[in-house]
Amino acid sequence: MKIPKGIFPVILKHGEGEGFHFLPCRVKGEKGFYYYVHYASNRMLMIREDGTVPPYEEVKSPLCLATFFLGHCQSLEEMRDLYAIYNPFFTVEKLLHKLDPLLRPVLAHDMRHALDVFIEAVTSVLEYKRRGEEVLSQAEAYAKQFMNEEAVLTRRDFDEMERFRKPIVYHLHQMDKVQVDSYQDREKLVRYLGSSISFYQIRLWWLYRRLKVYHDRMLEGYAPEEEEDVNELERKLADAKWRTKVEEKDLEEIEKLAINPK
Image 1 (cartoon, rainbow, N blue to C red):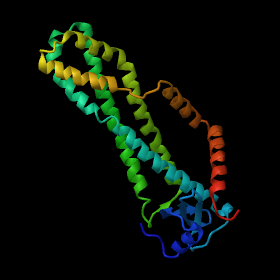
Image 2 (cartoon, rainbow, N blue to C red; image 1 turned 90 degrees about the vertical axis):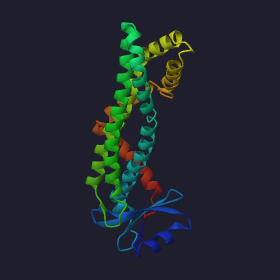
Image 3 (cartoon, one colour; image 1 turned 180 degrees about the vertical axis):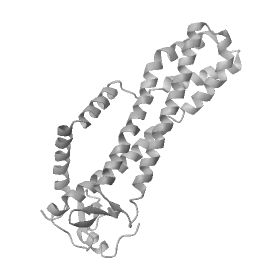
Image 4 (cartoon, rainbow, N blue to C red; image 1 turned 90 degrees about the horizontal axis):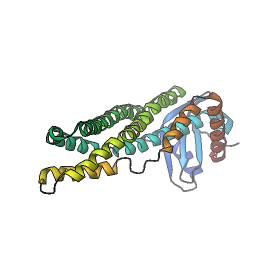
C-alpha cells in the first residue's frame, strides 16, 4: 500500500520511531479529506491531505469514522474464524448419509425420528453457514475496496458495513440454536447406537464411533447465556438513546488517544 509522498514525513515526525498502521484511502470530513494513522502505542493521528495536522475538533468526525470502520474490518476477520469452526459439519453430513441406509430399516419409529432430527440439524447448520459466509464475503469485498489510495471512505460506507453485521451474527447464533434444539434427540440416538451396535459389525461400529466423536464436540464451549446476551444486545442496538451513550463513551476514548492538537 502506497503512502502519499507528502504524508509519509508527517507520519514519521509524530511517530517517535514506533511502528504504525496506515489506512491508504482518504477519509471524507466536512472540511476536506484526511489520512488516518494508528501507531503501535495505540495513539491515533489524522492528517489533512495537504500534509498538515489539523486540530482535534476539525478531525473528530472523520477520525471516528475511520476508527469505527477499522473496528468493523477486524470483526470480519474474527467472524471468518468463527464460521471456520463449523467446517467439520461437512464430515458429519457424510457420516449420516452413510449410516442412514444401514440403520433406517432396523430402527424403531422414535429412533428414526431422532435420526431425522440429527440429519436435519446438520443440514440446517450447513445452510446457515453458507448464508452467513455469503454475507461475510460481501462485507469483506466491500471493505477491501478501501485498501486502495484512490478510494474515499464516507459515512455512507460505514452505514453499509453496519448493514452487513446483523445477518453475519444472526446466522452464527442460529447454528448454535439448531444444535441446542436437537441435542436431546441426537443424544438419544447416539446412546441407542452405542448399546446396540456390536464391535463385530466393523463398518457400522466405525461409523458410529466417528459420529459420536463429532456429536460430543458439537456445542463445545457454548454457554446458553450467550444467546440471551446477544438478544439483549440486539434490543439495545435498536434503541437510539443506548447507541448515543455508547458512541459518546467511544468518543471519549478516541479523544484520549488522538494526538491532533486539542
